[in-house]
Amino acid sequence: MPTFAPMPRYRFPRRAVGTRISKQICLKYGDLPASVQLKIEQADTEQLEHWVERIFIVESVGVLLE
Image 1 (cartoon, one colour):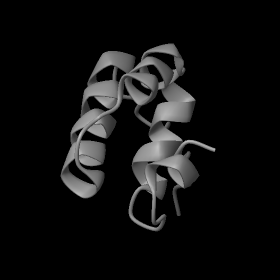
Image 2: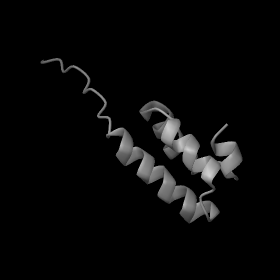
Image 3: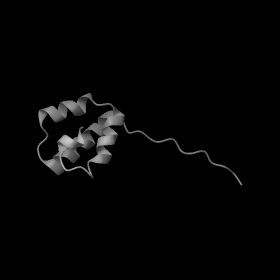
Image 4: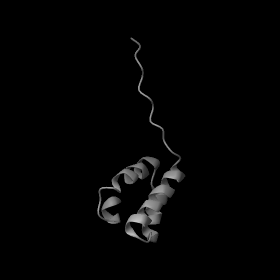
């Protein structure tokens, strides 16, 4: 029986993930404060992806970006 190697995880471009989390924050919490936008711009792709996953379980943008 053949053995298959696990598929590598696809990573979206950093800019696309940043745009996604910005839109999600606006939809869930309202306006996007400048301080939050700056934090998004400075974050790396891994951090942005983490926020995209956590937005569904946290109650505030402050907790999201901890």
